[in-house]
Image (cartoon, rainbow, N blue to C red; front, side, top):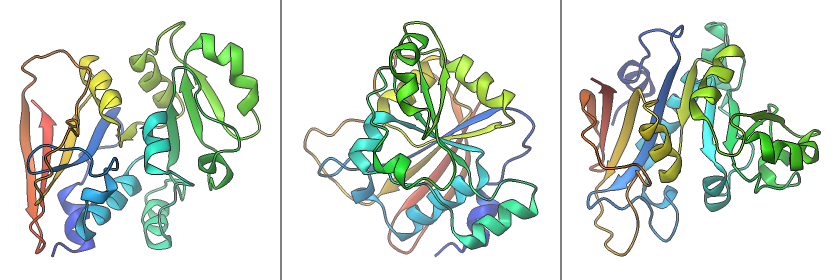
Length: 235
């Protein structure tokens, strides 16, 4: 099984100065992104370790509001050993959790806010921020990007303006598709689970127009449970 050190080496960032969007997903061998409605049901021990390593390396973890609800996100927290790793490199103990919601379809009493260990961020439109942004003033920072529709490039620039250059997107598929369509994805990390699910589960990308978007294979790992961990970098 890959060790924690192996994973930090395998997913090491070449630098932290250039803004980078890294996406992390798990998929069954037949392409299903969920099992019984949740992506977490597809993962294994190493997959969960990879997720923690990627979170530890990031400045901000980006998640769509639908994924927050479907996966039951609470407060985002890396463990003490990973917090030490971050502190040794001049980073805050914990990454920021940022949620994307064009309609602000969240509630200020949701667990993702109540259990937060670092003040979260909500990315939304200027229209939604005017209508409901004040509802979240006590629990999160609201960043408006785009008047009536989300401007994800403006979001990335707003993050960089706060010193958050390393963005880790954990889904869902529509957010991944929107980032891909906008040309903002620099790296994709895919865990291939040794499972064949069938059913009607979607793919890891939804909503992006069909196009040939070449990425280079930047790394590959396996574990004793039959999982394959692929890392792709934009060509």
